[in-house]
Amino acid sequence: MPPATQRQRKLTAGQSRQILFLALFLPVLVYGSGIAIMISALPDLPDTVAIHWNAEGEADGFDSPLVPIIANSALAVGLAALFFGMTWNGAKRGTSPTLVRLLTAFTPGFAVFMMVQMVPSLLNQRGLTAEQIAAQGVGLEWMLGLVVGLAVAGVCWLLAPQLEPVEAHTSEVAPLPLRATERAIWSQTATMSTLLWWILLAVITGGMTATIISTLDKPDQWYQIAIFGFVYAVVFSTMTWRVTVSPTGIAVRSALGWPVVRVPLEHIKRATVSDVDPLTEFGGWGIRFAGGRRLGIILQRGNALEIERNDGKRTLVVTIDDADVGASLLTSYLNR
Image (cartoon, rainbow, N blue to C red; front, side):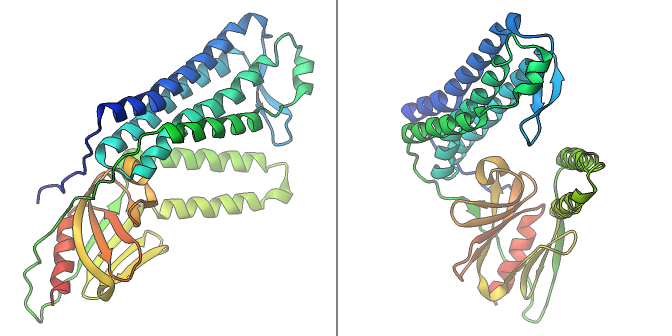
């Protein structure tokens, strides 16, 4: 079966200019200005500056002033490319107008939030000794960044283009040829790509290791390990799902058996196949919610089994190989 038709939205020249200005030009200007200011302050900075502060606001990490400049430059390039790509691709692919508008406003707002924190935290260390830096602590830059960033995001929300909604294109499937008394079950495993597996494994391993190290000398905070361990186990369990279609409906069960999503046959209006882009339509991977009252179990890009319900609850979207087979079998049972 050919892939489901992708949703497309034709942008006007004015809408394209608005998105390019708000989601690309403004963030690049903010990031570039912030990095330039930090670089200009290098001659006045000591050889070692504070680059990290603990929860009490005390400096607990020190390094060359080049480290935060290089790190922030790399982070700025990555974030600018990521958020603009999500915004532009979402606008072109027909993603919910509200989500596109939110991304268009969030991108420059986050850039301001980040730079208003990073630039003063470095500039405030000009001309100070190591002892003065250690005693200085962290200021209220994060709060100022939050306020200014929200204000900028609010203005950009008002300036963002008003896009027309685009109906999701789903492909109808022919019912699987079954005799009236014949029963069949379809079961398929859906999992994330190998790259995403390794990325999540690295993040979870790093986070768990940091948690264990931070609690080695604090036995009264051992509960943090248990909490993070539980959260990580749930995250791992939602990286692989088993999708089963039977005469009773559809069940989507995670690797550990929980969580599980069931839709009885009598609550299914129709089963179709759609084409899904995780970032632009659902904002990422995993259990996600999207516009159009859709609940997604999003593990990969491409074909998805889409279950429209007749009980008023959210449409279920599961990205999976051979989605057309599952939809075809469900259609057969619905036609009985």
